[in-house]
Length: 115
Length: 115
Image (cartoon, rainbow over all chains, first blue to last red; front, side):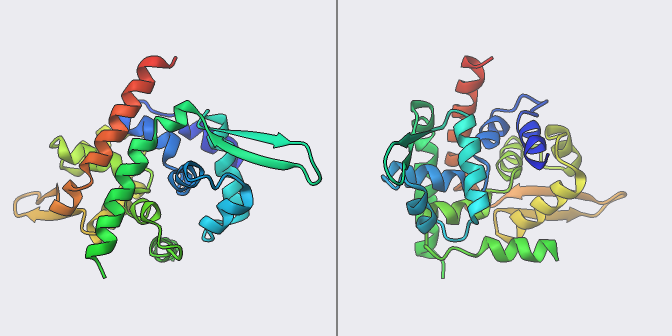
C-alpha cells in the first residue's frame, strides 16, 4: 500500500515541471548513489550494500525495484548455485549520468572546502 | 523529533561519498524545485506554493528551513503590513544550479519523448 501510494505520488506532476519529473525518477534518497555504484561495476546486491551501508536492505530493495520499473536499470538472473543476480544501467539510465556527475563534482568540491 | 532524526541522517555519510553528500543537501523531494522556482524569481512563499501544489504547506516549510540551515537559501523579512518574507538563493545555492539545469534538461527530454 505504501509502495503503491509512493508510485502514485511519483506520477503526480500537475504543473508539468521538468525538474519534478526528473526528481520523481531519481529523487529517492539512494537512487543516484545506486546508479553511480552500478556505473562503477558494483552491480551485485552485496556490493551495493557495502557501498551504501546507511541504507537498510528493504530500502535498497525498494529503490532497485523502482529504478527497474522506471527503466533505469535491468535485473538479470544467471543460473548457478547459488544463482547470481546482476544489475545494469540501461541506455535511459545512462542518460542520467551527467546529472550524477554534476552531483559528484559539487559534493567533492564541498567536502574539500568544508570541515 | 522526526525533523531532528532527518537532520541526523543527513549528516550520516560513512563511506564519504560525494554523491551522498550532495543528495543529503538536495535530495529532499522538493528542494531542487524550490531552488528552480527561486532562480526564476518566485521568491515568496505563496508563489512557491503555486509552483508546487503537490507539496503540503508543512513539507514546503520544512524544506525551506532545511535549505536555509544548509546555507542554500536565505530568508529575509521586510517590515510592512503585513510583513513580507522573501527567499533568495545564496552563492552556495547558486553553485547547485548546474545540477538543477541538468535535471531540467533531462526531464524535458523525457517528457517530450514519453506519453
